[in-house]
Image 1 (spheres, rainbow, N blue to C red):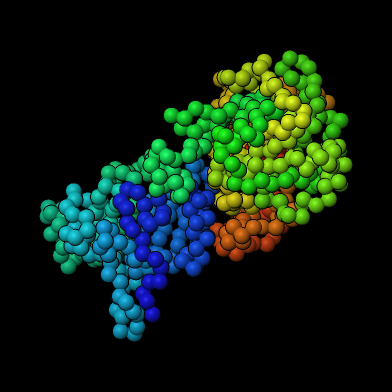
Image 2: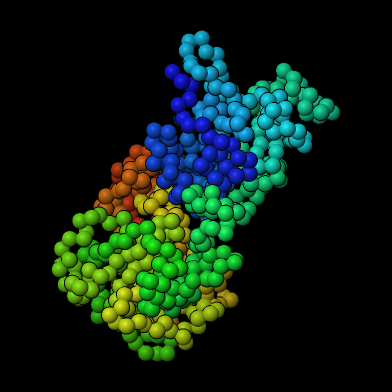
Length: 524
């Protein structure tokens, strides 16, 4: 029986391991791994249930001896670790890091995680290096071995060393060449000149490689422009930022056409035709109350209710049936309903709703849009963008890994708020700040209390999980039933796992998880 049936992977210091490239998005890496079930049969996802967007997300591949670390806010690959050198054949410049035996049997005495010897790394693979760092065992651990980290630009090796034999006065080459040193225990691939310099800012250093693995082999001048940030300007303006050297693309709700979207963002990854049936009851009940005052004091009616949360693959195929019932509930003609659809940009992290023109909801004022300049609505017979749905890809949420994480900022023209209003901000903080901003918009018979109401949305009952949720147990995890830092590969049953809450503000709709993270933000 072959020692390792996994394909060989090339080691690229400072760049990646095989097809795994530093800077790639969690969504793209996990999608690629899941597509190769025979090579990667087991994937363990570890995260912090209480702070899923702040703490790193870790992918463990036990059958392959590999561990991947992603930063929490941007969900980009920051560190590749090899923990077992016998599970996957590793090659650096046509030389094996470890020569794996052809067969295993009762006479095989190879250690389960035996790595390369120091002499092999120093003399044949990498060459001379500056002195590394020795970490002695903790005084109360009872261990007899410390760890020596030998670092090169973009790659580092860890060698166990007998603590009693360590002498800082001697050179590290003679020490690690002696019998006191064991074969390498692990290897790390990272961005930086040395591990000692890079480890402290590993999760916040800017990434030079693209988020999409398919684009990593292209030169920078031939890569499509990736979306880095979505800036919400208010009153129907949504700016898509794509790097320092690329002009921003402004989506004007009620005016930007599908042709504009394709020209700037590329063709959508999928097109999903909208279903209103689940939320039609709210449209009927609130139709007479959906008037809002603009900054100039005039009133308008928004025919698209903010509770419309249907989007992309989160809905089952059966939702497309019974179009006549849906159009009757929403008060639109069947022709209008059939024309409405979502442009799904999974690799950008958002959906854009295409429909007949509607005036954007009056919202907050920003530095560029103080509310006096409203979006001009397009012709009534022309399809335009009327909503943007920004997905957070929160680990443990129902739609986890269906979209790349989309980062956003609400650009508010005020100096009274504490801290930024962005995709990493807990909703409790966002809600307090937005209530302060929205007091003028919420004045009426319900007063400010109307901003604190919410609708409970149960993803578990409304929809069937896709393959990604079946693998990772996609329902929102409970902090009291799920142990810290893990997501099982089996879907969990139980009350409330699919529940999220919808909170509405003028022009904004938040889908909020129980850990106070925003799972999706709809701008309308």
